[in-house]
Length: 53
Image (cartoon, rainbow, N blue to C red):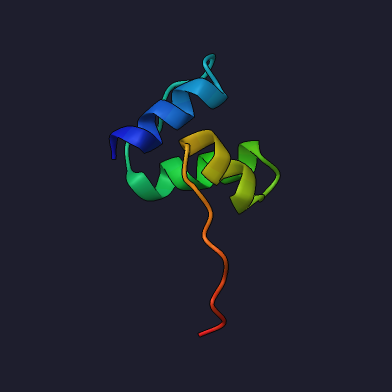
C-alpha cells in the first residue's frame, strides 16, 4: 500500500491522494492515459514475461 501512495505522490504532487486503494489505482491510470506499464514503472514494479497461462 505504501508503494501506491508513493507512486501517486511522485506522479502528481499538486493533487491530494485519493482515500481508497481502488480510487488510487484509477487515479494513476487516468494520469498515465490508461497505461498499466507506465503505472507499474511509477510504482517501481518489475515486469515479468507473460507465461501465457
